[in-house]
Amino acid sequence: MEITWKWSACGYNLLGYQSTEEIIEICKYAGITAIEINSGFTNGKTEKEIEAMGKKYKLSGIELYSFHLPFSPDDDIASLYETKRNEAVDRLTKIMEQASLSGSKVVILHPSTNPYCMELEGFDRYLVQMGKSLERLIPAAERLNLSIALENMLPGIDGDRFGSNPEHFTIFAEKFSHPHLGFCLDTGHANVSFPSDGPLVFFDAMKKYLIAFHIQDNSGDRDLHLAPGYGLIDWKAIFKKMAEIKFSHPACIETPPFGPANHYKYSADLWKKMFKEIDEFILKI
Image 1: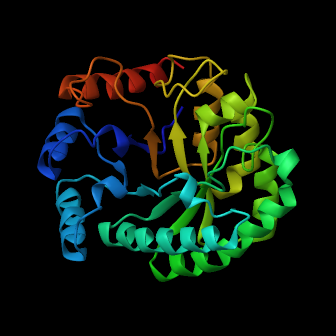
Image 2 (image 1 turned 60 degrees about the vertical axis):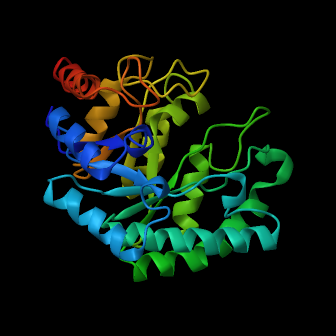
C-alpha cells in the first residue's frame, strides 16, 4: 500500500515543553515533520512573534499544516443563544487570524461544543445556528487563506449530539458546500459513535471533503486517544481508504506517546518510538 500522506504530531501533547526551540529539537530527533498547533502556541504573542514562530518551524522543515480552534463551552458556533454564538464567532475569528499568521492552512472546528442530546434539542435548530456562524467564518477563512475543517463529535450520554452522526456531515456538505470548507475525520470519535465500523462509515460520508485527520484508537466505548494498533479500529481499511483518495496532507496522530511523562513532557525517545511503531504497523498491514 502506498502511503500518500505524512504524519503530524498533536500540539496539545507538546505544550509541556518550554520553547519553540525545544519542540523543534524533539521533532527533529523523532523525525516529526508536521505539527497540528493550537492557541496554546499563539496566546500572549504579538503578530510579529507569531509570524516569527511560524518561520522558525518552516525553516526547520516542520510544517504547521493544521490549527485546532478552541472548543470550550463558550466556543459553540451552534449555540441557541445569539449573544453567546456571536461572541464565539468573534473570538474564533481572531484566533483564525493567529492561525494564518503562523502559516497554518487548515483550522479544525467543532460543529458544536455542547454535549446535549440532538434528538431532544432539535437537529434543525442547531443547523440553522451553525449556518449563521459559517456565513461569517467562511469569508474570514477565505480572506486569511485558510480552510475550515468540521470535525465529527463524540456522541452524548443519552444519544447523538450535533456532529456525532455521519448523516449530519452529508447534510453539512449539501447545505454549506464551499471551497474553503471541508471535514476532519476523528477516528476515535467515530469508533465510539459506531463501534466496529464507525470510522469507515464516517470516512465514506466525508471522503469528498476530507482535508484533515485525527488518527487515534480506542476500545469503542470511550475516547482513549491511543496510537493505532493499541485499540480495536480496523486500520487496514482506514489506511487503504486514505491511500485510495490520495490524501496528501499531514494526518495528525492525536495521541501522546505511550509511556511516562514528567509534567506532560515526554522524552524524545518516546516520541521517536511512537512514530516508528506506527510506520512499522502500517508495513505489516
